[in-house]
Amino acid sequence: MRARRSAVAIVAALAVLLAGCGIPTDGSPQAIPRADVPFKLLDPSPPKTTTTVPPAVAVPETVYLVAPDQHLVPVTRDVALPASPTAILGALLDGPTEAESAAGLQSFLSASPSQVTVSVSSGVATVDFRTNPFQLVLDQTLAVAQVVYTATAQTGVTSVVIEIRGQSVDVPTAAGVQVGRPVTRLDYLAEAPNQTTTPTTSTSPTTTVPSG
Image 1 (cartoon, helix red, strand yellow):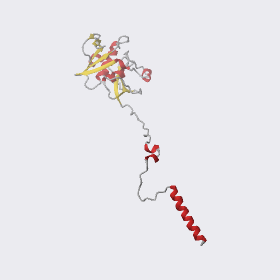
Image 2 (image 1 turned 180 degrees about the vertical axis):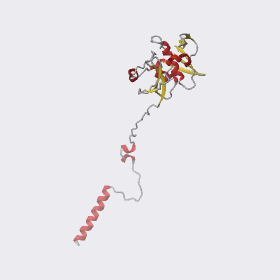
Image 3 (image 1 turned 90 degrees about the horizontal axis):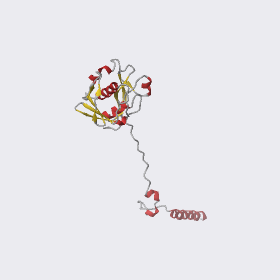
Image 4 (image 1 turned 60 degrees about the horizontal axis):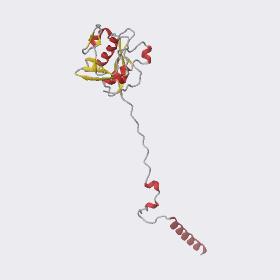
């Protein structure tokens, strides 16, 4: 009899303990007062996000340097898209890489990539320099030939007009005369690349210059 009373007392004590702990006895979900909800659950901090900038997409373009035999030589430059004529002429003005210089290649143009703007209309590329890139060079004819061959390497470009600060200038040709008309590769056949010359690939970084 005493053991039965003890068992009843234990059951009663457990019932009181469970009620004190707040264990719900309802059969359906109950709304929790907002004041009882931890602050971080009501207003969690937004997850941190990082933005990844995709690498610039570049394409190989041909520019012309001067070989030790005083003929033009084609080399390639990786030019960021869109590879505009301005960007390509800017890559030419970057000059040879260290490896190309070690191989004897050079440029006779004295301007920086940001100092040129190119526009194309009806097959004529107008190459406008902010400073005169031919003023202090060893061979102006080869320097002009570099520009002409590089510009006419682009599809649809057949001739070149050279300007200095928006003013058209006369340029020397291989025939030894100054002309004020658009010039073509035919004007610089004496400086043309040797038939066995093929474009060499540069390891220089992608070239990006203002387009125009």
